[in-house]
Length: 341
Image (cartoon, rainbow, N blue to C red; front, side, top):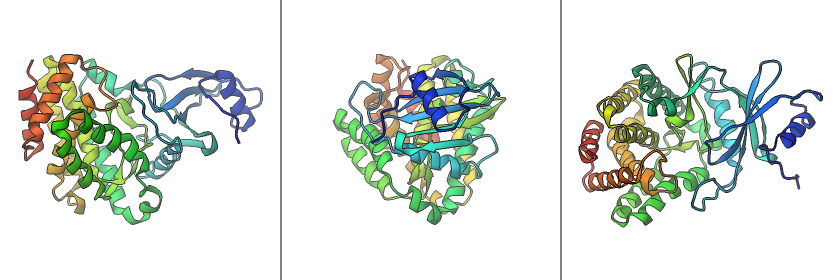
């Protein structure tokens, strides 16, 4: 049995990197624990050569207020996703894998060079740029389109959805249905429909918090729940973040609403006539509603919304679930009309 390793302890991580031959025996890189993640320990390792790595170690118990457990073996899924997607996506949009150590549930990837900024924090500060929204849409469309074309080849490695089940379907949809009984039937149908599809590689955490902006380019992180599944989930998950910021920042509500529509329109144009696109808009609407409610009633609520915003978002999502809009544009209009404070 391997000894326990906590990479957030600098001495332990240094000894591990030296013993594994990942750095020189006398090398003493600078190590900084990175905050913000709930599912992994994450440390920035800066070497004297100027090379930077991000070392991630998956946790079995996530850092949230409610009990939430999942296998740390999902770190292999992240490493594998990076290896598969890097050659398919625009250069620089996926970090380079340095090494993986599954017995210690960790991996290292190339750090995004400075200067960079977290896109979520820029959006919350009101820095909403049309080019970033278009990049966000085209990157997701590239992932879905290219992996959809390779579906059969990817099923062996990505067909298992255990991590997605525990980290998304249970934690977001099923749990929210237990907290909001009037939404239980909607979630039950959504879960069943989601499980029936394995069309493309689904990132599963496609969010501005997992995007860094470096010299104007978006760089996507955190692939640990990637799987072959329903692409509409990624759309709903990401649209929810744009709409929740429209809710939270009333002075920019019009701009974030327009960005959400542009995001959908850009994505839809970029996927073309993909065979799995039939009925996609209606499915994206339902996943957006599911995620809008889950982010105020699930195991991982949005931390920047206050109690009043949680209540308004919950009421708006439940009302729209009763008769889901036919289009993303109608969904945006319906949501915005119901959250006016």
